[in-house]
Length: 428
Image (cartoon, rainbow, N blue to C red; front, side):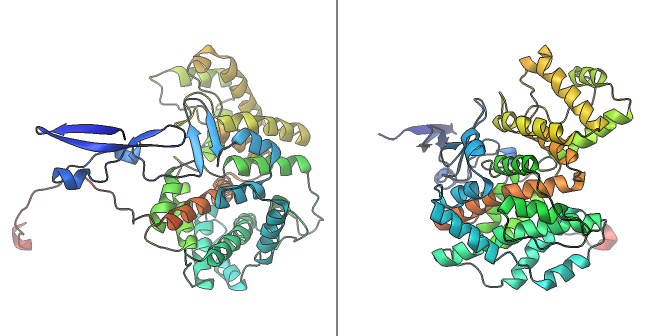
């Protein structure tokens, strides 16, 4: 017998089915509550307790610090797979065979060219334009060069759309960076892997041959994997709700980029560096700022510690901490801001106040450190996040379209004025 939950209101009892997920997560299905109760709805600001869909892509248990993509632990994927393998897994549901991976890679490389007219659109932006605004606009502009909508029932059309955006997005991300830095645009190299090629497009100087640093490549590959999906967060929910109107993949992704841009979402690692800069400008006393963080009366917030979802530890942070240490050790960067970061990290990991409250450094803390060490400007941190999140967004959009989910249409509780008569302007 199926489980049911009961809501009693005005002497009437409404029975609602309980849905159980594959990891024994339970949810009350309220789809018929409004109709059966004559208009009663639930109110959940920010949808913090509302499941918007059933998804087979990512499992997240914040209490126990668990993150899995399609059943595979994030720890094992980061250790044994590369970003393109993880992208294939997220999008298509299974790890690729060598033949499937080789075809995916070759098909992406075949679509990596970007129409010259897109470059003209980029030329229209001033150098001061924020790269996220540029990236969102260029992603949306791709629609003009690929005007036909994707037939979700056609496996071939779906695959071609996925390959195109996987190919062109790293080019657009690198171009947004080079525009900001005043560097000529680079088209990459088909002889390189996905991440290696992206880094070449980002960092190649016009007067020097590009030399790959495998430690840096490994760190960025891991960062992209760690950011690839994270369940129904703000930007992912945006991609799904825009796509639910049957908007195309590129338009839905452009909306997701805009959602990610917000400082409460993708801008967290940028906020870490801005905090470190402020501490440096105030003399660099980490003990002083740890004290401020513990003072409930002090408005100072310690950015990059703890997580709104992970109540124990961020499993991604444990992985990327190792890569961050390797990058800093290899580059030997002398940067007082990074010195402050290491000081905060050491104090937080040993201070009983932070340990007891499980306020450990999170993935945003370490990703900010890595990007800073590589000389990536803070404005580019969120575009780097977007590149990592791309396969997750694609997977969520594809799942939503293949399931034929209904158009997203949240309800509300109206709190405005009651019915009133219109007043002529002379009498207002």
